[in-house]
Amino acid sequence: MKLKRTFAMLLALTMVAGAAACGNSEGSGSADTQAAGSADSAAAGDESAAGEDAADAGEDAAPEDIAEIEVLFWTLNTIPQDVDLVEEAINEITREKIATEVNLNILEMGNYTQQLNLMISGNEKLDLMVTLPGDSAHFNSMTSQNQLMDITDMLNEYAPELLETVPESWLTGTTINGRIYSVTSMGDKATPLGFACRTDVLEETGIDPSTLKTADDFEELFAKVTELHPEMTPVATGSQKILTAPYLIDTEGNFVKYDGLGDGDNSLVGIMEGDGTTIQNNYTRQVYIDTSLRFKEWYDNGWVYADGANYKETQEALIAGGACFGLFKCFATGAESTESASCGYDMTIIQIDPSPEINTGMLRKFSWAVPVTATEPEAAVKFMNLLFTDEEIVNLITWGIEGTHYQVLEDGTIDFMDGQDANTSGYYIGDETAILGNGFLAKVWTGNSPTLREDTYEVNMNATVSPYTGFSFNSEGFENQVAAITQTIQQYRPSFGCGLYTEDYYNEFISKLEDNGVNEYIAYIQEQFNAWLAENGNAAASDTGADAAETTADSEAADAGAESAAETEAAE
Image 1 (cartoon, rainbow, N blue to C red):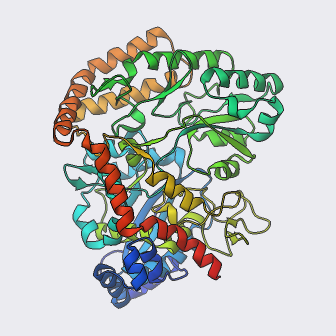
Image 2 (cartoon, rainbow, N blue to C red; image 1 turned 90 degrees about the vertical axis):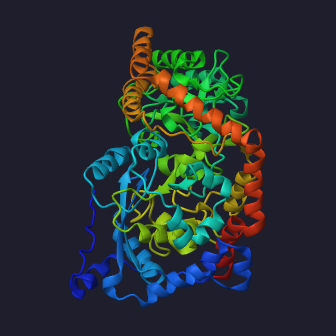
Image 3 (cartoon, helix red, strand yellow; image 1 turned 60 degrees about the horizontal axis):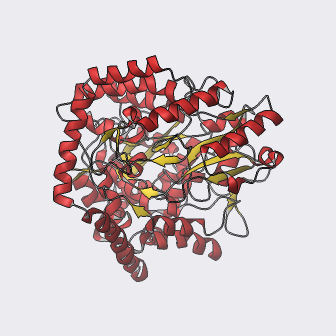
């Protein structure tokens, strides 16, 4: 990864001018910000006092007052060549609006956690980053190790529009003891489990996808694919697992799920139907053993990628290379076009879970945070504010530059420039609208409904919200145990998650978890949960739903943001 170095303090103006070659763009009018903020402000054409102050500061700033921030996120594709061009376009806006220049550091997803660990441990400058669903890049892990800054006060001072845009119930997911440590991306959180597969091969099998409901049904599909294409493995693994949290498979073949209470892909704790409010160790559940035994059958039948326990890249890459047929994943609304672009084949997504739920885990899955190694935290929060409220910024970082990296079609959706594709475009990181700030402001890729953003917003605002959203547990006093438990899970889980289950190895896993204090740790979490329940009770579910409704009524932020793209394109 090429990390540009920050400006040294008090350098000559000529050095700053030279560094300005890292920025450019199409300026974003105030309407963009207000479209994602208060509907009343948008109608009146006024900006908040904080927004005016930030703009004035940007316009009046001398070159030496320009802050420079390092921003880190990932791509499912290869690292694009035209990052500098996109930085130039972004910085043309941010110099004026927030007196800041942005360096985009884009990593391939398989390298993200390792590189992030190296940067944090090496105390390298890193001002803004996105957390990942599991392991050491997860919100829980980073907050337990005091790696993320408390940004509550900075959000109030430098990002009031962001706070108007993101539903209050979503902000609770990344709040600990009343303090905000990151902001969840404003994207599709109601993402149900599905199976995406090559449409051409699916049609060859003659199996109606609407009949595929249980794991037994999918086994019939896998057997048929193997019969037709013995050179192809039916199921791709990604990040060392077949099935993503929070889903498991019971003895009858039903896909079941648990509420991980924000635990992420470590999947240690959870509550399932029948548990009441008693937190369980998911790895000691019979359903976890049932799932692992079924995966072993799949592995023995040759239905899952043989080296999955060691494979750390994306499932899509295996399909793109022709090695695999399909993959299990939690999919955003209208994800077919994204999967098709990433896999290089037309893909069909078969929805498995009919009732997706928004919970703390979903809200912590992808969130924007300021690491403790930040040297420009205020500038980072100002840029975060633009990521959630400025349509031009969102589309630049998501899709690149219009006319260079994409074109707008007659129906308002966008596509590659003529003669280009995912491999030849100078900037294509895939559809990361679920990650990059406010995805409801992003343009819609061709193949999707032009109203995808509005439709997705409606799905999310009307989705079931877990009654436990807002609960967060801390690991204070258990830091060493948590580190040992996490390391143990990372050591053993890939084997069970990819079909290499044996009873002896499983017993060794559970024994090591217990030796590392897992029972005491879960009891500590239960104490915190009991206290939270006593304070919040069953009102939590209705409260979070009311928060979302109140945010919608007060600001209509995402509606306005989603409509703004269509209106702008129509005007053009």
